[in-house]
Length: 144
Ligand code: DQA
Image (cartoon, rainbow, N blue to C red):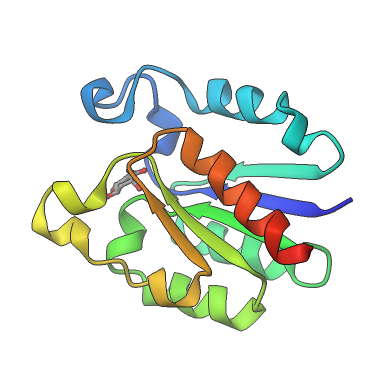
């Protein structure tokens, strides 16, 4: 049994309403329920957390220290500039997968840069909610 944190950053609470042509029509709760019901999550503890505040996400990463095996994070726009979040990921040193619903490489230029990519074990972009499942599978493969 593994403890996995799934962290979502700014504006992801608006999924379903926010630019559905880019992010789809499902809410974050829809995605949580979908993943939590899959057989892949059955024997693991998945803790979801969303915040619009950089510091809250960093605090959650600090809380993960010592009790969490892996982290999946979609930091929203913090991806592109938050060195504080990057430092938090490398400080706690818990295997972390970066996930983006949209393809950050086919949008505005500023989205092509991820300052957290290098401190994550994998980056998944443009696969919608399936990215969270792929991220989970990646983490589980690391524990094997
Ligand atoms: C996002 C992509 C980011 O560029 C954007 O700021 C988001 C969502 C994604 O899931 O595609 O808020 O991380």
